[in-house]
Length: 125
Image 1: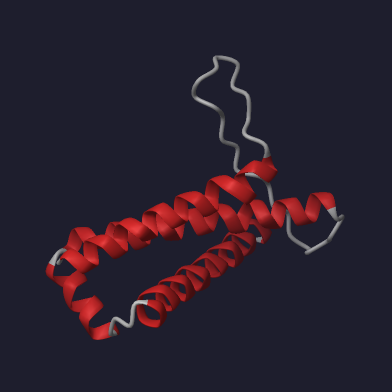
Image 2 (image 1 turned 90 degrees about the vertical axis):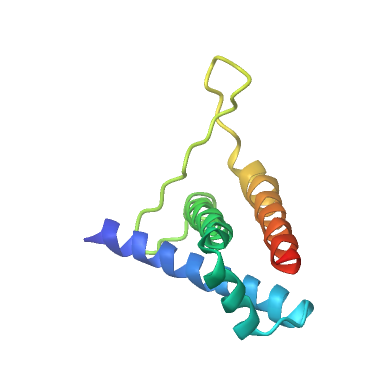
């Protein structure tokens, strides 16, 4: 039950972060109307892949952030969070990517790149 609760908490954080980021960038920064965005996305269903990838990245980020906080700062959330392990592809020894590198560089960079691609595709439709 605790595992399901922790997965739900991380998923809720990821959905909130994704909706906030997309709303802030698309509606706030680029002044696009929500109706226009939804019309463009409904006309071509492939455009939904961008928010889904952003949602997955925020899920991984939230999970690793909670795992880092609970491990490093000895915070007891009442739930157990474990790091999602990614390894380097270039070496044969399965060296894991450090948690701080994922939280500070890998996830934010991939979210920004996916968001940039999404904005460019929306403007060109």
